[in-house]
Image (cartoon, rainbow, N blue to C red; front, side, top):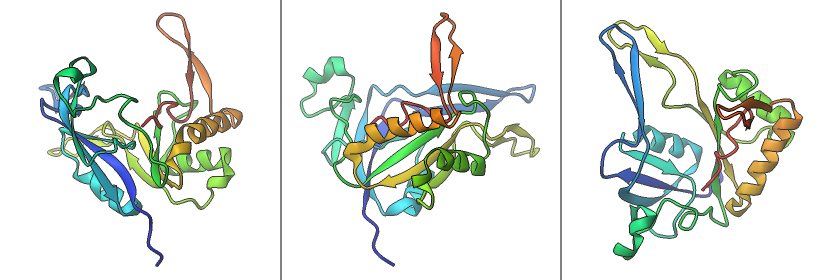
Length: 220
């Protein structure tokens, strides 16, 4: 078949511990959890994947100390530090919009579905059909689906399902990454028009905008 364009991404590696959610089995058989998502010292590596099948394999191979960004830095490799110590590390970058951007060419759009944010939770097929209903231009568009790290957790010894399907992600190859933020916002607004948006009241009494997908999920 016709060769597919390379899709760029950045693999970030934390040198000081985990960079993901952590789960364990408590003595009473319940599930314990916490999140280790802070990256203060690490490495960023540019990776080009050969379409969605290769992306799926790359995501499957990620280690607990790694995470992916779908923006790029313009460097093959770079040290990552916090913004306040950049002046001490010539050539290093921070995990901010000053250093990460989408390329002006093929890129990956990630749509993050959190069941707690949506008007109603969705199965895999329902998530796809609801996105396509809101944006019919996506009918037939190639997409990769994956469950989130917090989904489908079982007790290997007993087979007991401790946590079923929760978060989900859809990955779409797009032709122009420089249009990502506009396109993401337009899709978010299409979902609101399709009845997929709602407001919830925050702990401080403020109104929080929620939708079928996370409105910040396509940040670089």
